[in-house]
Image (cartoon, rainbow, N blue to C red):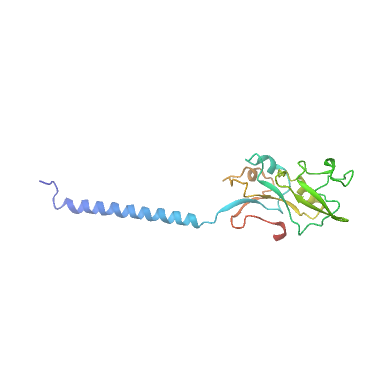
Length: 187
């Protein structure tokens, strides 16, 4: 014989139905949270080129052994100068490609003769360590066509970027992943 009386049955039914309703409501809230998170645009780290001061911390503070920050050259802004202040040290002995005349410590900037008096400067990203010496020289005496950018094919997109934490000019910021590069000639 059952211990259930007609008075106990509605309470058990009420509790069972209530638990089912609570479980379904929790499932709905969880699904809504996942959907809202997936709609939130993904952000990546990037350097604002007008705020960057070329302090050199990009080369030393990146969690990767080879920094994800590399020099970029805006060819549309470049004057193809004989004396490029991003390539040559201040007051070079000679305007040649000799190492003692170059500002870049790794030789990442290549100088190619076009026609008198024009030279083209290209960046070998494999050699660039993101030190910013070239962009500091280019910004101080030139037109600023050299600037640093985070290369997203190398960056691991740390939640708290070590370079951003060390950046004295707060040039690092989160930008939408669908527009990851802040180009100087587009700002």
